[in-house]
Every structure is written in C-alpha cells, then in structure tokens.
Image 1: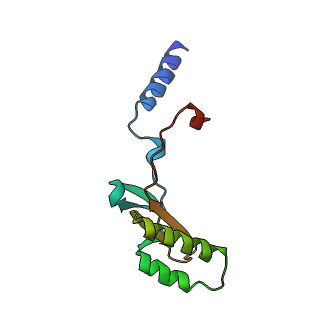
Image 2: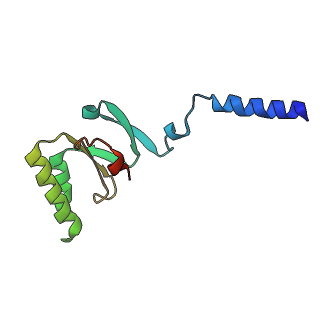
Image 3: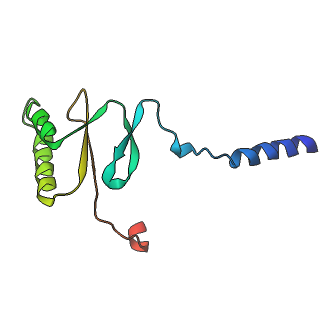
Length: 116
C-alpha cells in the first residue's frame, strides 16, 4: 500500500511540473492573428478575416434592412475615425454582423474598490 501511495504521489507531482498550461491551448478551429500595435498574436476563430475600414463600410452597406446593428456600427466607426485610434477589424466570412474589434483602450489602475 505504501509503494502504491508513493507512486501515485510521484505521478501527481510530475504532472504538476508540466510545462503545458491548460489555458494556452488553442481550439482546433482557431488561428493566431498578429496584432502589430499590441506586439502580440491572439487566437481568433478560423472563419474570421481581417478587413480594412473601407472594406468593412462597403460590406456594412450591403447588409439588408436598417436595424440597430448598422446604426451602432456606423457610430463606432465615426468614433474610431475621430480619435485616430489604432484598431483591427475582423469579420466573419459568412456574416458581416459578426465582428471582432481589437483596439487599445485607456489603462485603468486597479485598486481595492474597482476589484470589488
């Protein structure tokens, strides 16, 4: 019994020292996209492609109907253009309404009040 417990304990300790982290694995349907202004790569769904702001505006104008998404997105575009903020737009190949915006925000220092 003592040998079994020592073996079991050694297996647990060896697995804890593994270099692989459970959080660092990427899903099989994802790809890494380089974000220059962040100086890093981030995982994005495989069905998303990077588009320029002008291309996104064209695709947005082709969306049928006049609904909340178009109004909100046009307002977001105007805000980004006026602030000259660095950003990247990734859209779903099949549905332009599925958008991932990547841009820098203001840095907020955490304190005990914000942590609550």
